[in-house]
Length: 442
Ligand code: DGY
Image 1 (tube, rainbow, N blue to C red):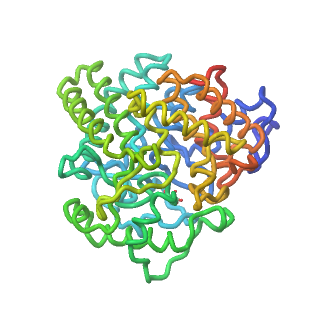
Image 2 (image 1 turned 120 degrees about the vertical axis):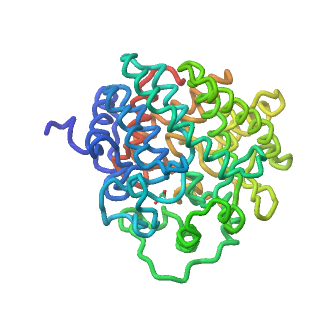
């Protein structure tokens, strides 16, 4: 192995710009398990849903067939009802808890999986990939193949997670938001009983426990997983009885953009019924998302639909409004922009996932404070689309420097820039390839 192909030890800076792209490509190649990419060896040894969507864009910069394959393999886990689970267990591995037997979702026509989903980035990534593709014929074949799967997934969200047609889909587990232990979920999670059964976490064998969710959170994560299995994943029963039921602003904003992108793909590929159906669904979401505005915070927030109250926590999800193309009112745009500038001025290293003045802010603990490269990108993408080039460029610069100084880590301390969590992290390497390597921020 040459130095450029050797593993980057967790936290080793990749300051040498010329070499950074090659290092990032090698991270993806090392994490390739045969058409899918593990997020980080050991800590996350399977295929994760939203990780794969971001990682596919990284592959797209140097191996287009492999990029499309990432999504093909993700949909191998799709359930008959359309749900695309958050983990696809393509192989056995004992370094992760909870594994397939715990979820109890084996069987059916799909690979073993978890029983919950994750933010639906895929349709937007498919649109971006098709627009960036150099091999147009391959892209056309792949989009045509993927469209029915994407439509089935979006229909599942709108049918099973919004049976009352409110325009907002709900999550039944904090992991579905992707922002697992965000302070926004503290209140609804407190209503979930802690499990009383024994189980052994594996994550803290890889990452300092102070940088992972707390044990009390895990006790509730496990309770919910067991509840889904015991309810035989019956959507009506889950909607009626799950003790955790949250309309997550971030997930709904991601779904909105993805649904509009899916409608556009359907139009381009002659699937006119799907285009119309997705446009109607997106219109309903766009209207309902307005109800998640908190006058108190001057920000979008999530709603606990079980308790019937807004979750007024100061988390970075509000800035996904631009990604969802929602900040079209000048007043909302102005308030969000003021909020973003004030937020980023408080931390020298990127966008903290929780506002640094919030009492729950913890710069080390996973989604309670650290900066995340892919979130920086999603938010910058939205900012650039809305014409806020300066703010997008600032996030671009901050992310480049996080990776240059902290390595291909999972997340970073926004006060010091120190990298934490899994090393050799796939979506960080992907972001380095498709975004940080570019001159422009969009
Ligand atoms: C984990 O295990 O920490 C994941 O984030 C859950 O998807």
